[in-house]
Amino acid sequence: MPKLPIYLDNNATTPTDPRVLDVMLPYFTEKFGNAASRHHAFGWTAEDAVDLAREQAASLIGASPEELIFTSGATESVNMALKGVFEAYRSKGNHIITLATEHSCVLDTCRYIERSGGKVTYLPVQPDGLLNIEMLRAAITAETILISVMYANNETGVIQPMEDIGRIAGEKSIIFHTDATQGAGKIPLNVDTGGIGLLSFSAHKLYGPKGAGALFVRRKNPRVRLTPLIEGGGHEKGLRSGTLNVPGIVGFGKACEVCLTQMEKDGQKLSLLRDKLESGLLEIPGTALNGNTHNRLPHVSNIRFAGLKGDLLMSAMPDLAISSGSACTSASPEPSHVLTAMGLSEEEARSSLRFSLGRFTEETDIDFAVNICRNAIESLRDSTKHS
Image (tube, rainbow, N blue to C red; front, side, top):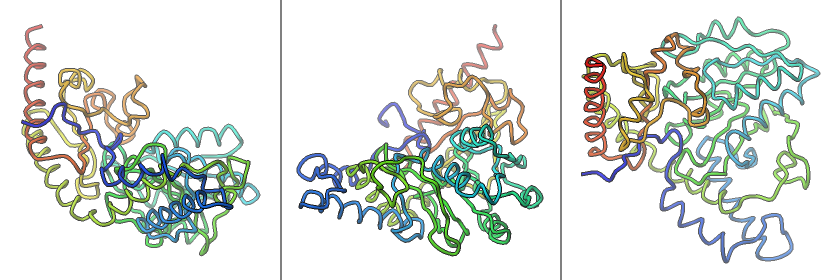
């Protein structure tokens, strides 16, 4: 019998790995120095810890440590990337291209840029969630300064053709930003292979602490310039002023190191468990998988249950922690913008649920989850028949 409730909402957040917590704890107590205090041992110790974490996080994405700016998380990193490029390159152009299926932190930032005089093209996706590359190419204008495409979608797990996008951006001398929050630590990423100029990611999605994240900013071939969002003190090469969250950064670095060493092992385990979950759930009449079945993360399933409202089904399964979409928009009454952009009706989108497995998910959790779902669906459908 697994421990209840069963947690299958790892795309919302992951538990902190015990190995990560262990390295963080001393930096709350005896190693409490400010990394910007350059005149005594407490500051040196903190600075050395931040330097190590920068190396660890950079290694995860194939970057050099000097190209990594620490932030409070991916939302801040995305804001820094999009607003920073828009301000720094306004003399060249004011047009940004993104996808209709991006996370709200990208879409909301793009709307801010539109209110500030920028132009944004929100490209649709194909029914499987993938971008049409030729549509991207056709959307580019002489004013285009940035393409922002999520590496792997947070609701469906669909992985976009990053190398193709990067190649097009490079041909046109356009900066390419990717929100890699869900992909980093789960699948191999390399900023050079993808032609990526800016990359956002966050610690709490890869078994690190909340409140720590980073932005990769390419230094050469080509060098990317940003106008900083936050002034005051010149921290992080002047791009992100403010006292560094040393315990969080230390944990972030360690989490990246752990992911790098066991990514393949985790991926193999999770893809098997995901397939077992899907096999059990898709046997239920009226169920279907949303999104591409090949280009996707190993741990995510988005499944729709015909004739059932997702929120009603979730409320019937209190022992199962799943979601109907992004945690950042869970308060919104609207159906998933990702699924409707893929061509699903509002009713189909509202009947869809996301299952996201994690490092600590076990086979007994999957067996129990399938049984919980099956029983809840049968009960709800029976009550509908008799009402």
